[in-house]
Image (cartoon, rainbow, N blue to C red; front, side, top):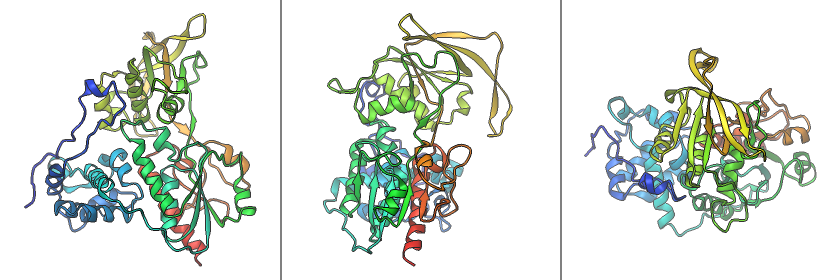
Length: 460
């Protein structure tokens, strides 16, 4: 019998005043009873509107009907037919602006908790499955994948299933890309990412870490000297942006990328970590996206008083609503409608305050959002000993500068066609390396598109 409740089952989570002092996962996941109840809210619509919001085209109603019937492993197999990272997507995808946005139940109440059900199914599979994925028979073709983030892992997985000999080249010492260096443990446990990577290895994918493409070896050398027939570039967008204001080079000013990498990848929050990290007392995080929320919540867990400084209002914050709510619950202070104009330091060049100016919203700009305008004479200071800049990132220019004939747009992204093909024959690209910083699921969709095009090109 259908569950016609207008509200989705709430997600169990740690108490805010407990979780803001640890790095354990905030959301605890549905119980079997909650998953069954939530799945029964799905109307199994004939036209499947939810699927139009999924970049990897998960067969959403089909997997939810399996959950409703208690057939959890069958539900997992449906998801994994199109998604290489279900346990990841169930945690970090912005479902509210994708699949759940189109859910019919959302017209009069909450949409079905599609993301929460996906997470439940993936976690159930990981807890109960003991069989490793089978290695497909080789088709004799070799493909190189640059970067082990969501785009690269998806492309590698789709090609490996078709029998390709795939090698993934990762610059860091651990595979996972932004999933391990950018997203905190309390949102995405690293053991989950490692399990997904291990699954790819079981299918025959080789992971080559500590290999910087463009420095250790070039794309041209991969193809001309090492015999790879195609290359997929999924190297992400790891070049941080900074404000052009006085004091930006003082000690205690971090990019969000560096701050999060030290904490997430190097475990700098642990007492015995070899990686140094400032343990600040008062922190200003400049920006309003998901990365800003991650940085702020990490700083809070280091024991700091934390401010989010954002030039627009609360309604304009680009971060997921859920992440903003979690940050507020954990005690993050939002200083909206203000913008930094200068950073000050003591005689040792250590940050001691940030000066901001109040803003008001004017007419919409090119993005459709109302343009923030400074209010003259409204400057004020916030005492801080750390400033974290979270203003976005752009693709690193290293690959561009070391690869012959690779067309780049004015923002540093690699230019591709609808199949992910670059201006170089048999060289494909996707994810943040093309679009600039975007979502995990969009990067996965790009990896899937490129894998399909590579297969069609090499199997002729």
